[in-house]
Length: 367
Image (cartoon, rainbow, N blue to C red):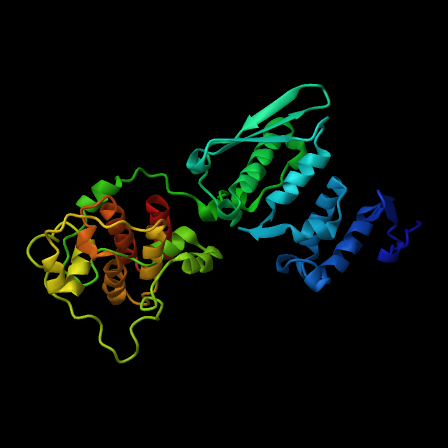
């Protein structure tokens, strides 16, 4: 029996397309050989592909289907929840070049701020013009890319062209997802608990009336809601004063001395108890203040970032007080429009301290 000789990567031809060069493997063995070389290319590919020939093979085969450079496609790939996801820019490029379109897609924007929408229209080879209108930008839940803030129209355009393709030509991007889409995937290890849960108001009303110094807030809830790489961005985005940026209570320093709440104005609020315990007479002096000084945009994330600094549960009241002191003290906000959310954030940290998953699940509901 004649056994075909093993082909070397040196035998893989390069074809010219539009003045450029493109690898043209003819057999699966040639693609495997190329993937093995690709996996050893170090800084030419992202870290999640280095020394992983199988992942490089998947990217290379995807690039071949799109008639694109495998290294260019690899540079736009990410590892999200053990799934290879691709940058929105790449998916937009694929739709522009591979979809059966007679005209290039047209992007039209309407509305302002949270009501901003994008409509993508294009004429297909069959002569029919089809369009897709995005949801309000304020209704899009997952916005991990910094472009959502720096250049929202660009990112909304990426979102819309992707959805346009999923609706009218899904074969073009079949099995291909952006990192934001991959974030929503759930396997057995990430199964969601669908058991009906009480509302936020019900949970606050039934919270135990504890006199512990830390009643009311919790650290790991925020981490679990944000998770993974977003932690660094979460910390950097939290507008904390220098006093909050310090690590937890230094060795040898005693934790804040608990004080009894002044009067009964705190009895229904764990957040109020925490602030009152650290605030002493100052807390009592502002108990009758019903005004609510304005909080900056994104205050809830900054507040959770402040609580996240606590390395032990006993330090949570200290960081809670330090945050609210910037804005007139906790009592100035306790009965305001943000009081319930602030209390829930603290409770998430306090009641689940050390349980990252539980904190993440709660913060997704609150923030």
